[in-house]
Length: 283
Length: 214
Image 1: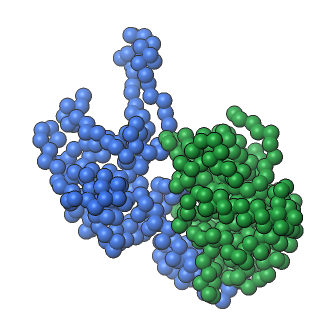
Image 2 (image 1 turned 90 degrees about the horizontal axis):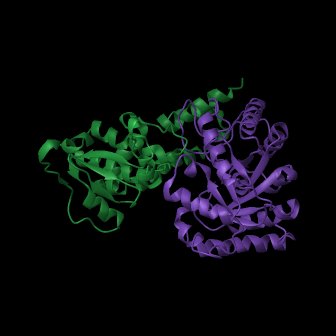
Image 3 (image 1 turned 30 degrees about the vertical axis):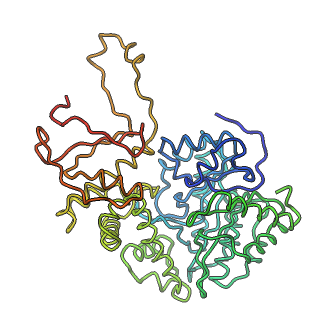
């Protein structure tokens, strides 16, 4: 098992098959990228060339594992096979962060493969905190939960999402993955102030930041990950770094994927944005 | 009175799987953007089916492929953690469901493409080599059992789907529609057996006719 002594910092990209030849193309192939994030499910229970590629990149770069199927808010018992798969993968990769989303993805054995919203109630808080505890006990480490983009809110909501995440992270002793684009998207869709959201989170628990592009449909915004990061999200990111200090940051791009060099160039914008906020070199 | 978490999730899931409206009264302003979830559910599943079965898609065209894929995911909501496995039962479903069951080429193409996908990323296992075999004492030979490498999948086909699939994978226009296989000998005319193997991704080999496999 590998062990790493370095500190996790800097700016990362997703490890996507379209870019394998660029990333694995030899020395300095991925200059400008400090680490890579994988979608955990893509590498659980698989082998062959995809896994060989991942192991090669993990020799040279820190890896973070980002999941989409933990379904931390679901009514079903936690899937032990899935957790074991996460653990086995983590054993091999020694990731800096293991993350998933504050959401549920299906009930009664069905997986809807979407990050669905939770009612922000006391009942949900107890339920999710208990399950985060179970996951962390199983994995023997903290996980980070990400704020998902949401398109509806519930009449039963008794607290804001940032209040919910703050309480949850304290109660479950977990970390947070702050998706700045998702804050912007949800703020637009539900009419709250994105700055209030970020200021309301416990800074010390924010382990990583996501940035991504979205689609503005006039009366609502959809988190699409198919376009460059939008200008207002860059503004919010600068404010976020000003407030939080340096936080490892990555750009997610999952559709309409451009050449690798374009994403590296966009990542440089994140570096510069953090620099303008006074934390570029350290971030 | 507050509706509990599990009930709200049941109603939300019923909305996505069956178009139910009961969740709306539990959403602020009755959820004007609930349509985002409605759209995303099927759009995501269709996208993945299209990625996993490009030759079936080409064979059927957009509309018919969409009909088949939607009917399949409606009949078999995903139960796997990874969306990678969404299409696992597609070819078996096509063999049974109207009108596709009358078109064996469609199910055969789906089975073939799925097997190629499995060959690509099946879990690793170490093949047994000659030295390991040679080290087995002679008296232990009668008890030996062999298992295929986990990337090996055998599918029985009635239609020669490979040239069409190969053209689609190479982003060329297929020259002709897949032809039924005329299978001499022990296969009895209902099919042939193909193997997809990891050693050459996206390739496959004729195996011997079934009757000659010991």
